[in-house]
Amino acid sequence: MNEKMIRKLIKLVEDSRIDQLEVSSWGRKVRITRRINANNGHFDQAMAVQAVAAPSPAPAAPIPEAPVSKVDSAAVDADKKYVEVKSPMVGTFYAAPAPDAQPYVTLNQRIEVGQVVCIVEAMKLMNEIESEVAGRVAKVMVDNAQPVEFGQVLFLIDPEG
Image (tube, rainbow, N blue to C red; front, side, top):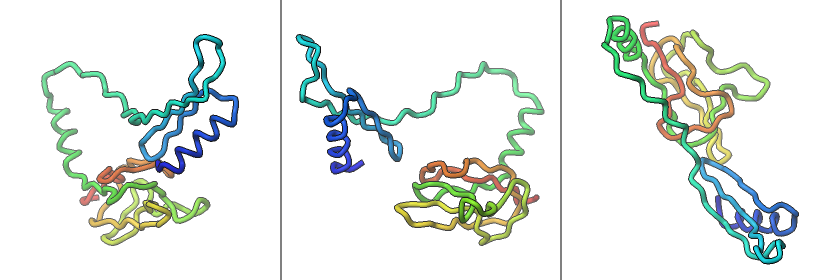
């Protein structure tokens, strides 16, 4: 979030009756709080602007260790056979070329090398993401219109499928 945008947000708080505003964008949060004077209970003109790191997802509760069974190792081996299609940039994931259009790929669909599988919008530019492997779409890892990070897994492709 740039300085100009933060100044606009401060002005918004000053001109309104709200005492706190929190805005998040691209994984960053800014909280603007109007201070209350403890002596008379009225708002001071001073504002507190606080940059807050966006909360990361809560870590999963630790799983008690259990003996590894044949089923567990088979599941691990199954995950290793998938090829990950990762986001080459930070942006917004779109599964289709337009809101009313069909998605580029669907679960269990067969895809080819070079086939467009989604769009990642970055700075108002629509970047088509192509598959680097032929196979079957085993899992779609991101919901439509959700922000994605560089290197985030978008799809799992089964090259044997």
